[in-house]
Image 1 (cartoon, rainbow, N blue to C red):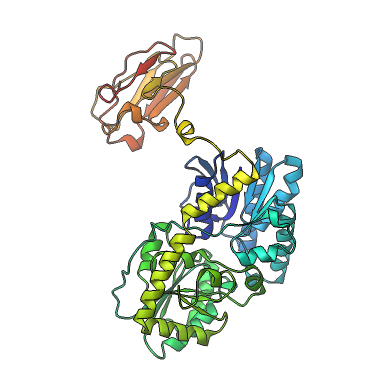
Image 2 (tube, rainbow, N blue to C red; image 1 turned 120 degrees about the vertical axis):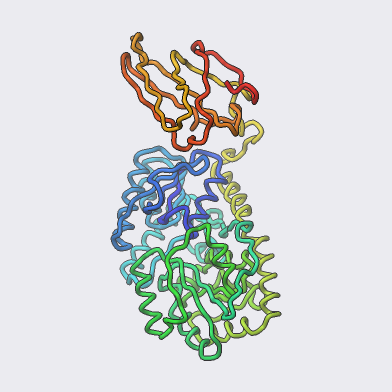
Length: 487
């Protein structure tokens, strides 16, 4: 199967956790197509899945999208897939155009929406791609019941499945870490217009007239949007109050959230939110991190976050109501304690990554009956007897007698042969037995007659005690390995 998302993975965006959950949950051969950044390689193996990352450059969002969509089209044409799972309508439209010719099933997950600030033309293109994706999808996955109700107007009920976000509640299970005298407020997420950060800044301007606070607004990957946000902060005369930062490394998210006294999940009055709902992943991460939360009361959010029970809700776009909610939450310790404890329990019960993985497996079993049904006791082990090492052919082996870890193995081999020869060398560290070897520690080299070969010891094995001598073994022989005799 092929899974696509226009985002860097791993990363702090919701796509990161979602794709990793799919790769972990689905039984099958999984390819992932995502966005490349400077810190991420072009190709990587994530568990049993292959990750292909697309360089999209530093152009604007629309140009980057075109580059990514072309790469998705090439991947669809390069390999045969049984299932294509897209987390955006533009990739969905590309897959829909090729579905009949290539014979795959299409899963469209509603997880990507347009930035209102990009204008009506982008909104129109998104709507057209969204409609095509829904029309041709074998299954439509939606995050909330509100979205399900909206999609049912044009899609039969049996093709629509609710798949809520899921987070690793264990990694976010932090307790308060802030020791600042001035309360600290946090917003994590994109800086797109539908997140309505202007209302947040307006509310903060009101709050600081009553009491001092600090705020961190972070999570946007686009440099231009960050610059716009800093200009907006200055326009609201909040330069000494609000700090604007980019996307943090995923591993730092729990600590960042735990360092806040209050977390915000705003949303605009956009018709999309009123019809399709909203359930931003940072909201769930706040709750899992035991943080007090204030969120815009749009459909989806209001289903997950019960007002005055798991947090406080405010009417979207109402900066006065948001300011009042911030002041009330900061003032009332019992309210903070009660809502954080309730929200913490709720996210663990309903929105864990484990619950999402189980739901994904159920969805794919429904899509392809029998595909997810297997006995893990049989499937999780390699065929053959544990501890037996198969060696295809070793005609010569060079083992340098040296303690220098920067040496090279250098030998003319295969000179007397008329056929290509396979030479295997086993590298065993002092901390593991041969039974624990993986393929990264087996160096396999093929040479033509008379060819000279030079191989350096891999850098990641610099601390090993050296190459262990191995006797020449007859072709196709099997040598049993034990902890005490790794040779």
